[in-house]
Image (cartoon, rainbow, N blue to C red; front, side, top):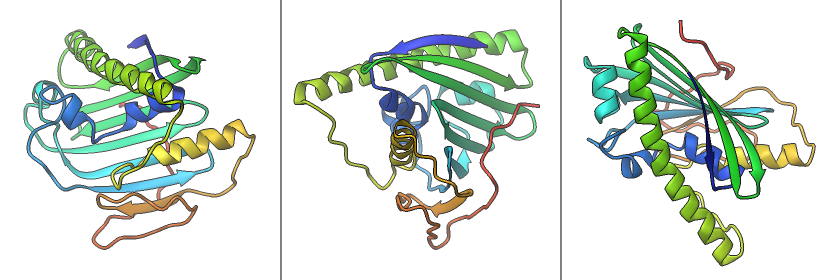
Length: 229
């Protein structure tokens, strides 16, 4: 399934929004997350052309989509990735029967307009056409909510004359996405391998090193996408 949409926002804001988890419990409450709070572990992996975060211990998302696509519940395997030059990728697995992979290629049209080409691949126990119709309805509603917030943010940036962002301890990907985009813009390509950073509700250090936190899961596999099988 392939869809093309546009946002009235910067390239960085559009990508960061697509991969940001915490905002979904507020902006998309009832559709996607927003139920009982759960403590999960996050492992951030960095390399020269990408950054990936893997969430462990995440229950099936609450809301309409989670109940329909996985009525039996279960624990989710979840990865979010940014890959240069401008690819946002989200992957979910729920057991052996449910697998979703969404890859969005983002292209800046102007400083405050971004076009997204999203490719959705999925495997479920339900008929493909029925799932596709459900996904289209669900995804377009989610995107409409995101688009309104991104447009409001862009309007405020212009009103106040520029960006002055502050990252919280839950902002796992935003600073890394910004750094990779700036390095690519300047023609800088760092040569280092995958750097796993364990976190439990903590932002990894911006320095290119491994930091570890107690009771957090560390895995050293190389980041990369996969195809639903």
